[in-house]
Length: 148
Image (tube, rainbow, N blue to C red; front, side):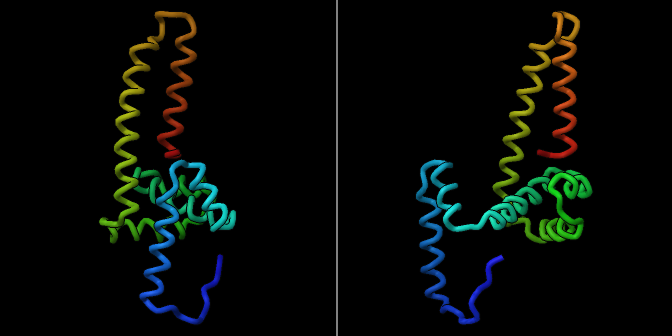
């Protein structure tokens, strides 16, 4: 992790720097543009650390078992506990609001996927549907367990 200088910046300079940082990040038009900017700004370890933090919040909001989160993301239980306690006290956190919105969209998409699967794959009507349907159910259970 990067270290911060002992010499403190004034609040005015910090605000200018953060405005510049936000401006650079929000001007990017595509995912690839944003990824290239992040490649310039963050080390590979920092990118992984940030992605895992977002994933921990996401999985906790989906009510995935904390032990399963540890196994899936290869992190310690104390890390997951720390984020779980943060969720309890920070309900108006902007990241949590965005993730809750994504979870709602995911649930709606999952509902339509289930509906179409049950309509189009009816085991016993056509040859091979049993295998495809059982594979679908297995993948769905695995996703529900791991959350990703």
